[in-house]
Amino acid sequence: MTTDQDRAARKKAIIDRLMSLEAQELATAQAHYDAFLKDAQLDDREGHDKDDLAASRENADLAAAFDAPVHTHHAKIDVIENTDFGLTDTVQPGAVIKFNNRRFVVCVSTTRFEVDGKTYMGISTQSPIYLAMVGLQEGDVFTHNGTEFEVQDVM
Image (cartoon, rainbow, N blue to C red):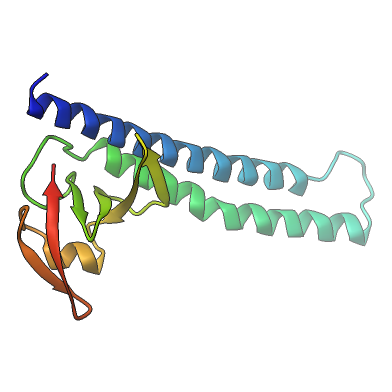
């Protein structure tokens, strides 16, 4: 395999893990939403006491609270699916970058995740750190919050 093929395969593994992570987050949020929504529904009997009504209302409120994360994760998956993750040498959406010995995927914000023993984290194209380095290449230097960083790798 050539170096570009190796980098493309590594990047694909990173993006596959990013998508898997977001799909898991969506499934968890959806499961919570569904469970609370189910518990919010009253049964068919005619009389319900105040405790039944209060529990139903509380579960409906909790279901509503999980509705926003469900939409958020759907939106993140949509962004991931519509981002060009081709190899690049410029910091841009879809790039995997390394600076300060940390690795990031420019697409959507995520928690940390592991691929081949290395830790990555998704960052949004709206994040201040991304905006400080957009358009840069390996070896370029940028400043964020008064600290200078060097872009160590871009793919």
